[in-house]
Image (cartoon, rainbow, N blue to C red; front, side, top):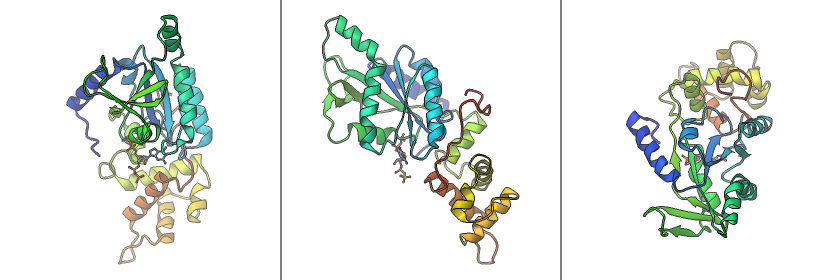
Length: 287
Ligand code: G4P
């Protein structure tokens, strides 16, 4: 995956999206439920104005259930429709489909008044890399979905997949770029593994993670590693290293290995369901 975005890439992605958005009624924006703010790019609000909007908090299986609910309420208050999902799991399909119809209610009623019957709602998926766009499209419109290509009036080459008789989805997602300029955003995207670790210092990242867990998910480290989480964060990392055998040949602690272990385990949900930002906590200038 390439996370190096340059102004040229952004302009191109934006232009492509502006073209695709003309064809659709609804924007399905996928975010990562562990960082719903940092994994968004608000430029989509400008690009997608006048369109119905649905925000999916994906990977909600890895995020804190209470935080998922708080974010859903937060986005709803802002006028979006919002649902938490695990895109790998078909169980959420019905809920998402119902919300799509709810989000497009006005359009459907407008069609009805004009005597247009059964014109499906058209939607496209957008989001920054790694939030689960392809997984969503595969699960929701995967093998069983009917491909409906090149219809008259549809830009040549565009493929639509049918979710059901009322909803069609553009089969290629729009890729939004992360807001790298904001350091906190960069750090949080690195935490969830969306920015390559070699770009950021994994040891620093794991220490920030240890501090965050101790503050907001007290006991999570003790439970997972059976070590005390008291003291300086680096001491906690050292205890984890000793416990898990992250020791070099010369009996020195292998900080890099221990840090990678902590970050991997966080990303796989082994440290529990953790959300890294909450609406109204005052740490996010936007939230
Ligand atoms: P993208 O198109 O937006 O770039 O994302 P993509 O679908 O490729 O998903 C990125 C990774 O996130 C995938 O893992 C996918 O399995 C995982 N993923 C997507 N949705 C969910 C979800 O709701 N819950 C969880 N837990 N994981 C999800 P991958 O590339 O196969 O890596 P990995 O599975 O080996 O970590």
